[in-house]
Image (tube, rainbow, N blue to C red):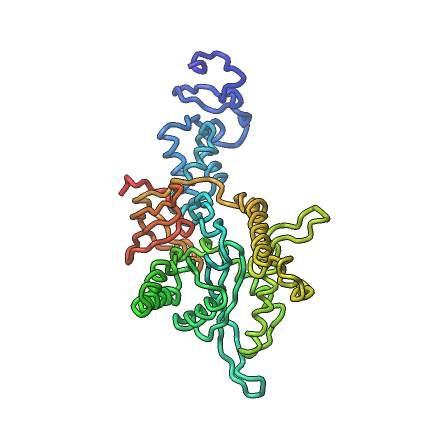
Length: 433
């Protein structure tokens, strides 16, 4: 070793800045500038420890525990009272990240690369062929417009077209499967049958899914071959994993917009059922008139596509057009004209609007940290991290891209399926168990 031979160290050597020397016991120590400080000799000239050694890990652990699981700076200050680990900040930070009690307090949730847009959001088709469903928070209604009225709760049922972002609103008087089925019948009568439904895993939706399957089955028995085809092409209902609201960002955004307009139009007033059902279509018009893309810089381009274009062929808030009844039908091939408009908007949507969905706003990197056997915390916003239950990952459910976003976990009392965004991975090796 160059230092033990008394040779001069090269300027780039890590010991050069420490003016290191070898003591009478053969231990490399820091020289420094504290020779005249009123300190013990071991504190003025700390023993130099390589960061890769096992002894360095033991020293860091002791300092971390002595500081009651202190942070990087506090732990580093404690161990440097007697020892100097080369490049010590990195090993200390790495040790703290692997400390299980500290990891439980941090409660950092797992992340995964944002997934690909589902086929239902990219495939051309009529509005509401693929529909997302959600409930908004309850609103208080009054039974009549007079003194002594009674109030009761109503719920908004939101139907969102996954492709065109069109919104359809219904009001129901109870939060049940029967109430939803009534709203769904009204929706289908006006918007047409859905091929795919998407929703969170609510109990009312689960019950409604069973009712829809029963209706298709009954129709098949009563209406013969036509109903049999209807059964084969019946509505497919897909449920998001429990506790995964970010899987339904499309309808969550619609709920947020509805609440925005309701707070500004209703305020603290109580409306009757009739008044609210009159207000809802007007809110629909506002939501379905929003541009699907930012305004163009072209001054001649004043018609940005809106959901209304896919519903009726033009902007919902447009002024009435002159009557075309007196024109010769040969001069106005109406069906072809409508089809041309729709195709034009689909083409514009494919070339411009979909490009705005291309970029990823968060979750930019893939992760393979969670594996079968990993020990995790099941996060719960109602409790501090120390109260989150421990669980073990028992199964992975990878998506089409091979990345895992949903797993099955086993707690002390049950087996659950949860998104990894609800889990905090603990730095515990699977081989430790």
